[in-house]
Amino acid sequence: MLALYHYLVGRGHTVTAVAPSEVPEFLRWMPGCNKLVNYEAQSDTAKNALKNADIIFGLDFNDFNRTKHLEQLVEELDKPKIMLDHHLFPKPQWTYGISMPEKSSTCEVVYDFINLCGDNALITKDIATCMYVGVMTDTGSFRFPATTASVHLMVADLMTRGIDHTRIHEEVYDSWSEGRMRFLGYVLIERMEIFRKYDAALITLSRKDMNLFNVQNGDTEGLVNYPLSIAGIRFATLITERSDEVKLSFRSKGNFDVSKFARLHFDGGGHFNASGGRSKMSFEETILHFKRILSDIHPK
Ligand code: 5GP
Image 1 (cartoon, rainbow, N blue to C red):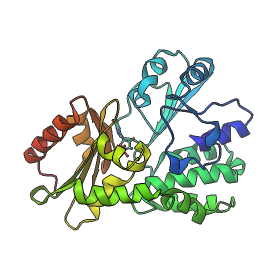
Image 2: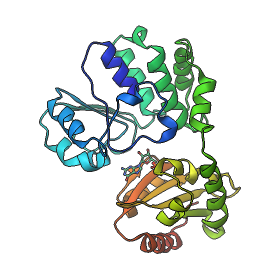
Image 3: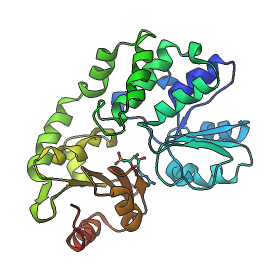
Image 4: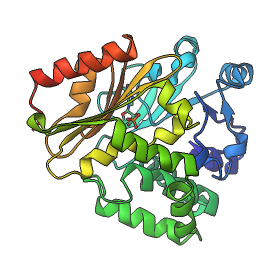
């Protein structure tokens, strides 16, 4: 979103970048982040920006319900809505759009979009920095299967704009608070269950757990990936108790389709190997429900 923001501003447009919730701390250093409007903190500013816009771009989602509290407003507004995305199964809600699940990241789609507009020369260091963050995080630092040759070509091009990839990596991955690091240790010891029979692992985080270590929602980012580093584990789930809902994250290795799993059981979706969903049940009921489903399927 910030890469597109900088590009459109560079083209002389008036742009407001709106996020449905708070940006996690490890991304707040990004160029332009201070201009972002967080709907949860500045709902009137966000609503007015959307109401006054000529065009609305939706970045990195394909279903209006992913905008949380903004869903109804986005649905009602009668103006062109353009999707730039790489998730499976886009909803037919958009006026125009590029939906390419084979792409590594939405940043790669934005890069293509700028190039298709004939504006490669307008990619500044700030734009390149934002794109690098997006492609680095979405490819697990260039390791997931969607990291194609074109991703490396794009990164080579971004490097020519003067980005500092070592600093970007440090800002995103080496900026943990001490509490977050200790929280990780606690979670792996106390809150991770392994189900060898199903090659699966489950991490459950209650509000109480999070309060104990004073961690924020953004601090749980990446936790779901840890169990996949255990030999033989092919399906990992994180169930988090949030203030307004119970959130689930799913990851897999190999041919278990977690996007189908998320869609079928938890009103969610995403990618083949990385998806999410939500539950209206209580935190405890959600855990029991998940375990019941797990014993009915064999994610191998
Ligand atoms: P995460 O587990 O990191 O929240 O999300 C993993 C992937 O699944 C991301 O691409 C994210 O956009 C997608 N995702 C997460 N939660 C949901 C959800 O509730 N619905 C849908 N459709 N996609 C989701």
